[in-house]
Image (cartoon, rainbow, N blue to C red; front, side, top):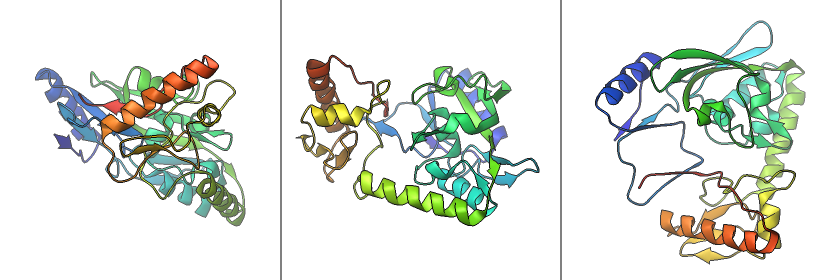
Length: 266
């Protein structure tokens, strides 16, 4: 079952009811970095994309937004009011909360580094505030995923700049992303986390796996860390291809790639 709450109070009521009934639930933003198994998800999925959605500039160059706000909208707002720092994220799909939770990164920028404070809810219904210092960011993960927590609001600490300069940089990053990544085909984003100091795609490419497919799932020839769907792929195809990639890369380089895509369902 998919449930879309209208606000924080709805989330608090939902998790209280579901916990009392001992019904499993999953929190998702826009679902952009998630692969759902072919049999679907048992329990309840709570989707916050576009519901906890608001953007407000505060007086001290803080951009406050609801965790369900689409990240591209946050980046465009920052650009329009002359706040710099988020340009690298302009082409990242999903929500502001999801990007912070997974510490989304591109072109050397990391979402967690821009967080001033954030508001969250525990799975027990406790409301709390998180600072950048105790967000505990890692490689495509943070405390939000580890505990887990439900982000509801994020304050980004940015810097003042000319709006035209901010927009120009964001457009340059977007053009570069379009050249590097298979944006014309369905995918769940980067399949694997980058090993320390190296991109996962480089190992996959060096292992000769570009273009390899299982069923309708194929390793992109443009960027090897993307598994694209030719239109007929099942979740099983994607999962089997991911396992094959892990086995081949490990056999050649003794590096076990860790999935970045969150796999849900049974």
